[in-house]
Length: 220
Image 1 (tube, rainbow, N blue to C red):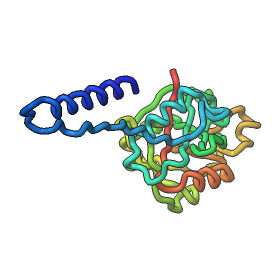
Image 2 (cartoon, rainbow, N blue to C red):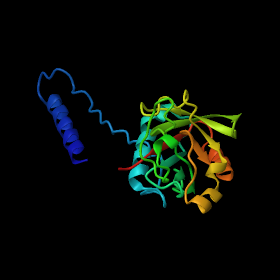
Image 3 (cartoon, helix red, strand yellow):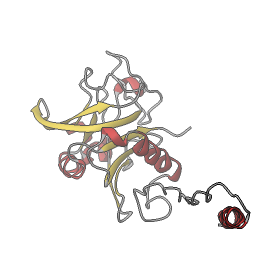
Image 4 (cartoon, one colour):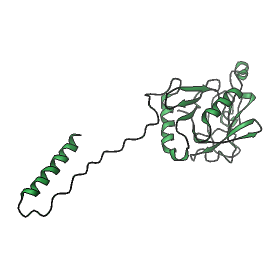
């Protein structure tokens, strides 16, 4: 503000001098003050929602900003925290207006957890890897497939660019039901898809709908 006032006073002084001097050519042009445009906020709360890792939340918001033009809706986002064990509710859907989050269990690919210990060890974007891919996805259309009602996902980053051709989708699966955790202490594994319990899948799919961000990553 102080710098703007100095420029304004300087411009006014120069204009006054031009009027007082004899033979002055023309009045100084009017000073135009430009106010920088403030960035649009996607949320109106501070910090990460309860249960969501702050560093991962920050990365998801950065992805939302980066891919804003590829998304139809910006009010809610899905975040999958693959740093956590598959028995944990590591799939978060965040309402960016209220800061509230809902949490679900979700699988990872067998190629990302070859020892089947419940932790994701590596990502892959390769065909035939049966691994999960990291990065930003745009939720797409729903369809009826092998696992019932499912949702297509479009990979927005080079790390998940093959999502559509690999048929990486959101779907329900028996190996993602709560009894798997009670019996084995972990969920089963997919072939890279985001598989949830049937009830959770239905709720998550309807919350995200078509054209929202799903961000999946693992913190070091």
